[in-house]
Image (spheres, rainbow, N blue to C red):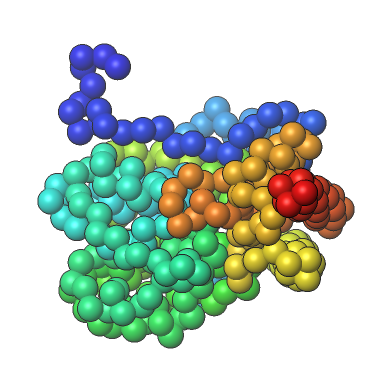
Amino acid sequence: MSRFLSKQFKLLTMYEAGEQLGDRYLKLNANESPYPPSPLINQVISSSKINQLKRYGDISYQALHEALANQLNLTVDNIVLGAGADDVLDLIFRTYFQPGDTLLLPNITYPFYETYANAYGYQVKEILVDDKLQIELLPYIESNEACVIVNPNAPSGHYHPISEIERVVQSNPDRLVIVDEAYIDFGGESAAPLVKKYDNLIVVQTFSKSRNLAGARIGYALAAPSLTEDLKKIRGTINPFYLSELQVLTALASLSDDVYFKQSTSQIMATRDHFSHQLQAAGFYVLPSLTNFVLVKPRHISASELYEALKAQHILVRYYTKPVINDYVRISIGLDHDMTRVLDTMLTLDQENHTSVLASVDRKLA
């Protein structure tokens, strides 16, 4: 750390992404899609388009705004683009929060919000999840602080119906409600239509999960024109060229292939549900999920032991040391044969540990 580092950034810790250990490992630790992006992307990004990279792009990003507006039944004035949902969230917090402000969010959720708080000097007030990692709605309604609702929540998967989201938005029109919908396309109902009714709501979505484009870094915010005007002003002043031409072309191609989008998300949901039912039938505790991952509590082995044992079998899942959630592992949904391999490995590990425990008890009794 140099002596020139700004005081506000000295306490920041780097984000710990899912391990990347090479192709020999089955990677189910980052909630990435197991399917490739739309094949239309290869057709769109032709050599003639690549040649355009020598030019600066259109900083209005009009074509992408219009395509998203058409897809979401909104107007271009409801949309703000960004280089991934994280970039959009960073823009929101830089625009609307200042040191001393308070943000309400669950104690078990996406860790970047705490990072933003440390970076920009606002306070976090936590809503405690219950023993099943469910999030009560009442603290949101009774509070006057700006709030974040990750819906469905990550990593717990807890989902609030749109009627509950609207109750929170209605409860205090003078506070900002941010709804992070990174996983909404895997079975949930988006709050996006509500931005036409309320000027204190921002909905954030991404191409990373359901559009199979985590590496492309494309996200967007949906809000009333009064809010998007603020965000576009800050964005256009500080960094007007925030999306590359390749990102724009990739996003446009993905949006034009609705059939592929529906097929891939439907398959992920079907695989998720089948995998969850098989785990439950085998006695594992699996939290309900409307995402592209499941949160699982093992039976006869601790979550940390299961994480390490799966890693030894070249299967990467996610384990969290934070209390309350440290009894679980998070498993991203892969292809059907991937999940069969994971299930078989988990059953074997669980049974081996159970047999070992029983043998130990027998020896003690003897």
